[in-house]
Amino acid sequence: MKKITPLLALGDASRKVAVGLLAVMILSACSTMPRSGPSTRAVESIDANAVLTDQEADYQNKALIVDLNDEVSNQLSHQFNQKLFSELWGGVNNADVIGEGDVLEITIWEAPPAVLFGGVINAMGTGSSQVTRLPEQMVDSGGRVKIPFVGSLKVSGQSARQIENTIASRLSRMANQPQVIVRQVKNNAANVTVIREGSSVRMPLTSKGERVLDAVSAIGGVQAANKTSIQLTRGAQVRSLPLITITQDPQQNVMLKPGDVVTAIYQPLSFIVLGATGRNEEVNFEGQGITLAQALGRVRGLDDNRADASSVFVFRYEDAQTANAWNRNGVAQYNRKLPVVYRANLRDANTFFHAQNFMMQDKDILYVANAPASELQKFLRIIFSLTSPVTSTINSVDRIN
Image (cartoon, rainbow, N blue to C red; front, side, top):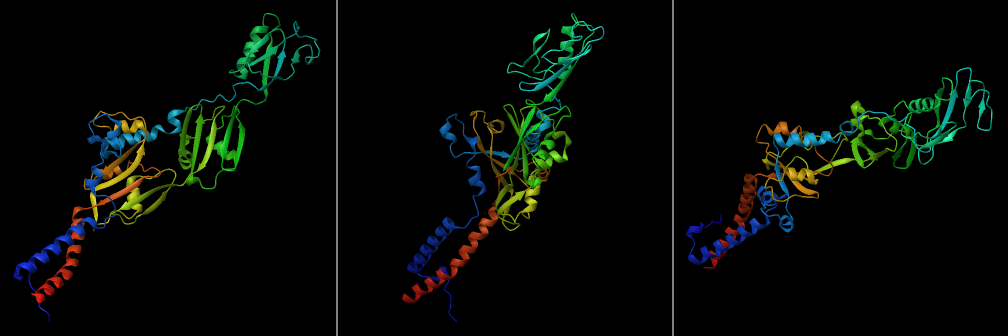
């Protein structure tokens, strides 16, 4: 059997060669050690809160690192609730309000003896001693219609009952106890536009008070409710909610108003998980969203042999309002989307409660860094794998000497 010569028993020349070879191999191993992603220190090095200037250039390639705690989880939860339809729009129905382009039928009844309209039959309409039905009129671009003995009357923005009371009040000085009935013959103003991929409809609104789900039904529904979001546009305000949230929470099924645009968007949501977890892949999730705790459960949790439980990161872009809320140094104020890294320390038991309130978002990246001990183990494995070649080299040098 070949005898392995200890390093200390070698001659000076052999020892120098052995140490040199070992040093080269160690340095090579350190620089090429395989990793699944950045270390905890590397992530911390991009923290924008460490920048103490207000120069835009100093924030290039930086991100805000935010520790997940009670304050952060509560604020994010509050921002999520602000996006609900019920938080922005109430349930007032004004679909029966008359608008430009609507067609009205106006009937005037005068108690006998009819003074103003009694026995009048002319080109304007048909009449009797008590009832006169005026020809149908379209509300003009100025929101007005013309009434005999009243003149041009502003009707847009008013309900049929309000118009009836106004006409009766104007005629009361000339007619005998006049009563008026206003009927909307054609609704050209109180409509909503409903859009989905491949089709769109224009849905008229009635005094019944149509709601968001009525609009979804008007386009024939959707094929995958758990992967569909409903976007409601009202004026300059735009909000989007998962369809499943609207079906489960009646308060989000708000009443529609004239001019609303309802868009059904098929949008599968997903996040990407990397690092020391049970699986590294893109994970789809339902429209109503999942929490960080659920996300970790779906990827089989952390890898016990590799993971640093104190370094669980979620990478995402946040809007300026949220980014400024996490700006601890108080120097820079951002006016654009900014990269934010949320850090969860799962060594702290309280973090598990925060993880149940932290909602994952579409295109998030969930990353778990390797523990320092894991890096040391890999380093030692590489060193041990190099021992045999070094020993062989030492023995060869000895034979030469």
